[in-house]
Image (cartoon, rainbow, N blue to C red; front, side, top):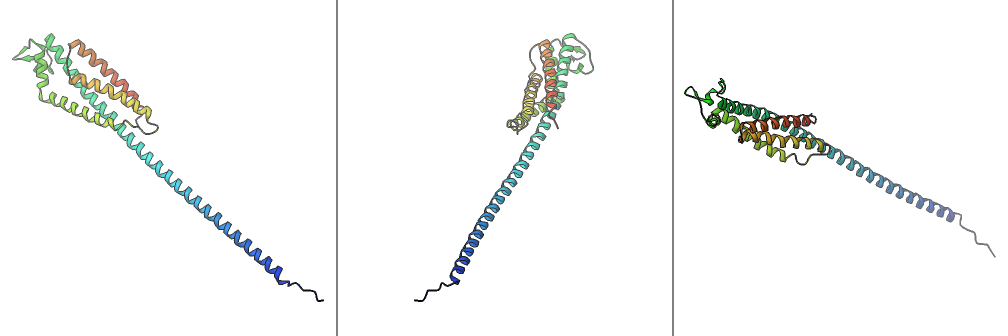
Length: 215
């Protein structure tokens, strides 16, 4: 009886098939790994680019806020100087009308036909009726309204500007108090002078606090 001889090519084919399958699987795994890596790299790049864009937007927002902050502080300081001039003149006219004090700056309000007015209210009325003085008061009232609108845009400070806003808000409140005193003149000379002086001093203190955050 003849023994059946095995075909030596069969094991070789099996080995080659296994190797081929192994290489195919390895290639697929490598491709999947590469695809995953590329996907992760793309996601990382996108995430990084988004962070860069957000950072740029944050920087722009901060710059715009800082510019608006600087402008508001400067505007309130300028108005404070105007209000101070208005208030000082009111006090001077009021005082000189009561005490019949001659002064080149106030005589046109406190005197009529070469004589001092008998009622200081007449002197104050003449002052407020003066074209230049009236315009200064009107301009101050307009500026006050504009600053009020601008302050509304500052209510949501960007990160890192919380303390700056607190200082700005404090200065704004003092600014409104001070400007309202000269725009709504009332009381006695003593009470007006005291309120005016105290508000002026308070506003300057608040300004110096707000000034610390100017850049």
